Image 1 (cartoon, rainbow, N blue to C red):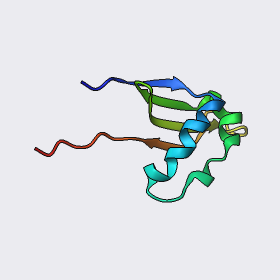
Image 2 (cartoon, rainbow, N blue to C red):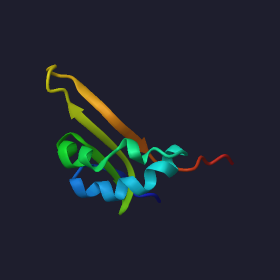
Image 3 (cartoon, rainbow, N blue to C red):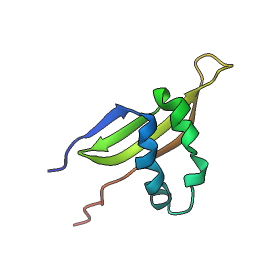
Image 4 (cartoon, rainbow, N blue to C red):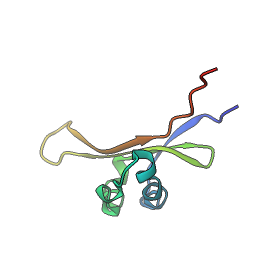
Length: 86
C-alpha cells in the first residue's frame, strides 16, 4: 500500500531535492526557471509534498508586496502514480 502524501512547509535546503528532478518532471530543461533564491527568500510561502522519504511535489509561491491578499505561484509540480489500466 502506498504511503500517504504529506504537505510540509518548505525550507531553503529543499532546493537541493527539487532542482535535480525538475527537468524530468517537466520533460524539458526548466530548472533554470527556479533559482535557489526563490527558496532562500520565499520558503515561508512554499510547500513540499512528501511520500515517505521521497519528494512527491512542491509549490513555490510568494505574497505580493504591493497588493494585499494576492499570491503569485512561481512553480508547481507533482509526481503522479502510474495509472492502472487493467
